[in-house]
Amino acid sequence: MKIYTKTGDTGTTGLFGGKRVQKSDVRIEAYGTVDELNSHLGLLRDLSVNKSREDLIVRIQNNLFVIGSMLAAEPGNEKVKVPAISAADVAELEQAIDSLEENLPPMKNFILPGGHQDVSFCHIARCVCRRAERRVVHLFHEEPGDEIIVHYLNRLSDYLFVLSREMSRSLGAKETPWISRG
Image 1 (tube, one colour):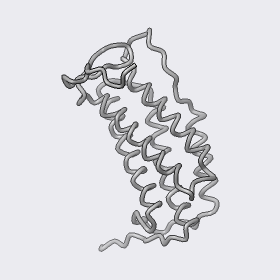
Image 2: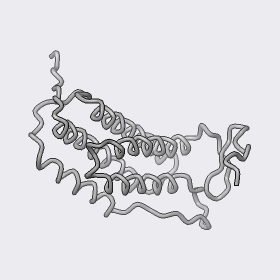
Image 3: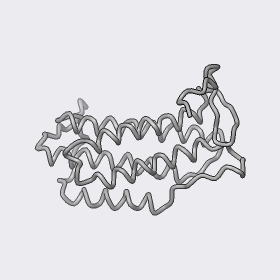
Image 4: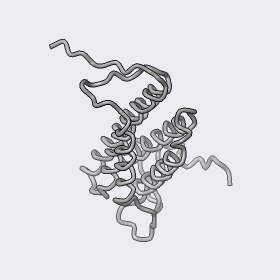
């Protein structure tokens, strides 16, 4: 099987189920951003500071593939069967957040992204996750979908924020508080 099909040369792409849509379609934007997020998670997984979290990050990446397939499925096509995200997947992220927070000092200010290149990568992933969440919410306003996807992405962005703090702690990087002008 060749990697190129030439079927997208006219600016359309196929959903699972066969329906063709514009590559600029809100659905494509949603699962494309989830795919972009998955690449950022791969970068985080490859950082030595996250070796102890590699298994969890791989599970998250697998879940992002599931979310991508859920979003890429042609709506209303009963013949298309894709896996799904569950409340247990959201709960796993919540447990990971709680576990990381046990070792972190309480926040007294917002924190500026940065302090170490690895931490900055995590903040970028968090921001891409928030964008993916916004894209999915936009899609679901146009066409209702499984809200567990929004829950998962929302919790994942929270996890990535707490992970960035834990990475700062592990790396001995300084967390710079945001100081309001007012």
